[in-house]
Length: 516
Image (cartoon, rainbow, N blue to C red):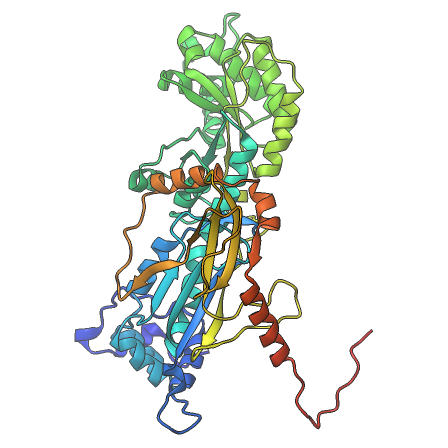
């Protein structure tokens, strides 16, 4: 725990500097600041060469999803361009119990002084491939680890999940983003790029020009149920249209649907599982068949609970039995690509008539941004210090890192199909071979002293992702397993450094046997 807090620091500041600037300087773990401060005060050889000011290079990769569009460049630029520490934050660091004066002064003078390379926005990359590289003075460069992890992890994770869900939905069915209540406002953008066709997030719709969608909430039906009960119990006059053809008082849910359809004559979706799916379908069918305009207005129904596969099939049968062949079904509720495939499989076994339609689309939220089985797992690792390649060994397969400044090559055949990805050392020649017509180095200059390429719009990125998916010679799943390799030179370098690091020096330490 620090002995001061930012609020107390602001109160103690001069009136002229109390106001906080926009700054990402403290969006770091404490150990980054402590290590940076330590490194800036370290001169091991006592020659004036400060350890923390020596040049270091790090690479960035993700380890846990097989593939994903590389997204998050916009977040990274925002962090880097606002990384200078203002006066209150500088004071906060200098008053810390660890006395972080050296790193505080360094961060006060300028924003991040290094250079960043990345693969272009929207490029589909595979697990363990370097998609970014950064170089600069060790003390401050190691501190932007969190910036890269925060910038890329969530965008790449949710875009991957959206890709998988869209693939599962198949041609002709849309995938909607209903994630706003579970995720951040900007995640809708990355879900859209990955595969979602529209969003319920109105801020995202406004900012990025995304198509907006939405239905109704369960509590609207509940409110109508309570309202009808209130009117009847108080003996208020009951409107004639609240009665059906036989003179019976209509169910509150049916009345809710009728009013809703009347209010949206150009087309709308009704949520049908507030009480039970069976009752909801009965009431929405009654409402739709009560007038030609209501029948036209009912485009689809949303099912949000229960066995979505069997519920969707039951709804399809109910609509077909009542001549509502054009009414579509939108399953929602903790959907992911696996559940979408289950629903499709159930409906594929239904022998529909030529008139009957199927599922218009699927909507996901919780399983796209919150209850996630695995995240991309973006990591930031040192590859070179003072021009000397280095790596991290690991007892866990897949967690060891690569050494030296890197390049990622994407190789094409004569037809322009992607056939191989090669990770090499930075200065190696492009890969060749009989089948390789062109090899493109994907790690390209991205940011230096506030200058970066113009960022693409979500629409441009979505099209880029779609175009790439059609260019891989084999499925992305197979490509991830079979077509990502290390160059011979990088593989030898890795093996030699591991061997060097693991040589046991003479020791007086008593070494016991490993547990069986």
